[in-house]
Image 1 (cartoon, helix red, strand yellow):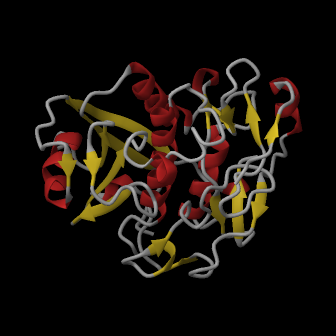
Image 2 (cartoon, one colour):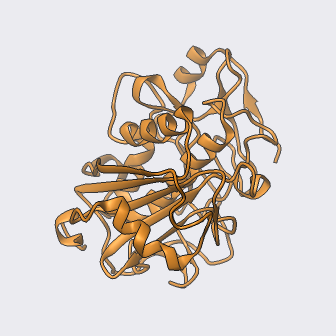
Length: 303
């Protein structure tokens, strides 16, 4: 699977409350670097495979999802490779992931194209409303539709408990042999303080739906980790069993001046009040997590 997917197996936030047009002009092109976690040291490459060139996703919508949630998640995926005359863009954030995967300076990183090749729904909760590791193989098969070289993405609705997803990274990613997968749940009712932060407590979500935008954040993290550390032998700190990865090394950091647990300065939509730090397809707004920058040896935010 992996050989054809990649070219080689190689706080209380301070908001910018100015008009959005002014804010966008003020955003530095380089992004911003900040201190990261200190509990496992800086992230390093462990000589394992990372994903490059094309990443094909097979999505399983497990449970019942509203239009806003599906639009937010599908819109974010479309935004990863979307470039337009606006800033800061989701594609700029994705370029940091690309630079880590290709082990090359940010400005020279080739593109990694993300494609949705399969989407299915399971509104009947066929595996129940509590998902444990035992159910992952069957759900992964549904998500991919048996298509080769496809990363399974399982989005679980707010009525589903994903065991283990409310701790540490607020998402799961792993491999069944060569089959890669991600699991992202909706934390709005189950663990909002742990996994919906900063929405609800201090910032308004850009889509107006806390669950939708929290899922975007955690899917973004899971995707970054899957690309740069697919088999727990790529880019990380700590141990393979408990790795500190590209986004988890920079917890709860989103904008200029951020520190672990302090969001930093983000932008605010003057009409809706929604907080965001990146623009995407059709002008959609997203709050994407900070990432570890190997060049700066520090956490990096898109603004």
